[in-house]
Length: 569
Ligand code: ARG
Image (tube, rainbow, N blue to C red; front, top):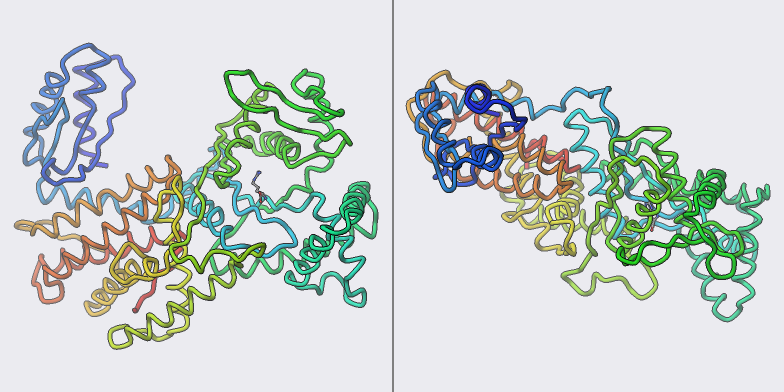
């Protein structure tokens, strides 16, 4: 950002304060009373050089004062340098920030980021809560890809464990043998599973049978393997539709079963290194130093059975060996926080050279309307919630039928309904509880998908009328002065590249959503105050370019958040 300013400031840094590795970073201040570009560098330099920050700032001010494109420059606060740009310089900057609207070319030399997300368990339909990891993970994949960083989007399926033994027993007892397992629906499988649990309450022998069946499956029993494969096929087929509706795509869906034969070497390694020690009844555990406050971590049961934890360890090893990733991000809810602390601490104890490894935690889903909460023992299915969102969007479209224009109300309802749900989640700080509130999600004038979609369609409609639907924005060379709302909008647009970077680096997609909401507000204020189509000459040229630019940023940002935006609405 601010390429010309940057060069000048860099020259000052290198000639006046040589011999340090501090990098210059310009930001766009939130308030326009702090100028268009701001530098906190003097503060960093001061603590390094043990000098007064304001004195250092003065050196930069003096150098930038006479620089072309700079209207005014001031020292602010403890030693910030705030710069006001001329209109020409602002517009030039804006033109240069345009590259952020398209994805950066993939940098094949960079190591990949692995994003572990969605992670449903096989043989069960997706519950509403699955949407959290699914869309947060996809937004993180998109943010990295947009920056040209290689990504491995990984749907780590829960496709292994005693539950398959239980399901196999249920199928054996109550299943319809005339039907092949592949023709079962997920609901029918769930029914079998639920029945198993109900009957096992009265008959403990069933649980034993389930465990025995899983052991047989682990040992490679042909019939059970075929059954298990069928269940995996049925589940994956039904997940596909939902992922498509959510614009979610994975690079791999290697699940827990894949690590079956990769755990023994890990267990051996851990024993040899003295990291895995014998716990109660022959179990293998990991113990941590007292000050870490971590309870022991179970990696193998007394009967030799492996666990979720054992598979996750084998998986870290596999991911490092296969991908040499720069980082592994686990997008998993807060309930597994302790688990991941233990997992990472164990990998460290094993002496593995680890990439950056992070539990990208998110809060629980809370429902604004109590009737939304799940009935006891049953899950609220994501598919049904998506359908309900679309139905509600249909109702909203109907309600606004006088003003909404669309050629395809059904497609718009799908885009709006699904978008509302997804945006409703991604616009919230993931570290807090995530509140599910239909009215807020579908509102037309709040921080919501419909508001974003409506604003985009409004901008596109202006461009259509101007006959500039397909052209790239071109800014006039000179403009007398900017109106207040033009200037506010330009400053907002300038922040897009920085926001993408912040959202990516902090793994906080809501920063992007918050930004897009602000941009919608600034665009609408500009639209309401400054005539666009009725303006003339370079003013009209500028306003149309700003409209095109805004619509492009909105679309790029929305799609990174997995949303789609309509040409008409
Ligand atoms: N399937 C797991 C669950 O439902 C989540 C998996 C998270 N990823 C991982 N590598 N452990 O609890």
